[in-house]
Image (tube, rainbow, N blue to C red; front, side, top):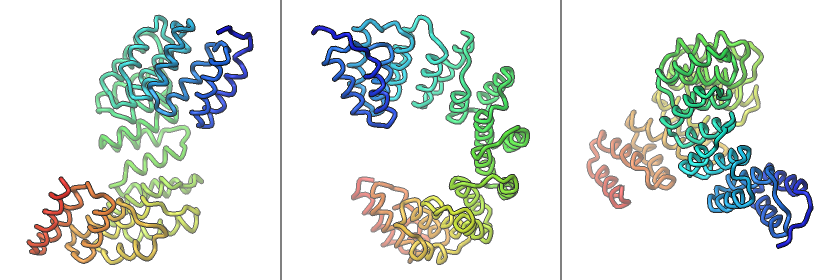
Length: 373
């Protein structure tokens, strides 16, 4: 086919526009139309098309674009190859992503960060740490987003300390997103003193900082102190904040505080309760043995149908406190919502067994077996 001399620029702009709007199929349709009309793609065309491939998760279309990359002579262009790494990783083929990465003779910072992010996305700790160490040895630096991601995703205390040490040496310790990630890591590892030390020394805090430190102290009375400190700092709590603080109230048995905060969330901050907020309240009442209050919240106060998290909290509370009547209702709801969840059957069996209702427990066991669980 003869090639027209039209510039690829207007095509690139359209493809990019559709991709940015999430209209990935339209973006790819334009890419292939561009090819059919004989317009030569340039180095800016392929990353846009590959982004659309990643958006729809189509590795087959991505491979077709990859073949075009090679055929059109862009097989050594690091800008294009970086986009290929990202596409393969997002489409689930980390092996091909690594193959492209290894083929790049002169890797840049984006190459390293893209490969590192790909491993993190797939939960491959060994590969991620290998790339992390390799890029440092080659004189490249992970960006703050990548550091935050690797810290938040999976870190042993040893690994967290190593990365924290590297961050300190590079002088970027007080990047807000990095510190937020470190707070989460130390909290998850039970090192609340370390998390608090970092939080108190942050030059700037955002909503994520406050939510992270409150969540980290979800089984500690300090969660409420941090919440009060947050309010005094004129930072408005958001929906996630209230999940964290209501969860803390549930773990600590602070029913009155939980009720007060649930009311504040709606009346003062204008936040409509979501499923997870109601689940926290059911857990709050359930742990305190207030089974009737928990059940009434579901049937009388919820403005939408309760989901598995809410009924699951209800069933668990009934199993702890031996409430057969409401436990049966919660169990039946869960059997409909989560027919393959073995744990729900086991909880109802536990309720019956504790009450000496052996035949009912056996009936639930047979129902569970009939469903192949």
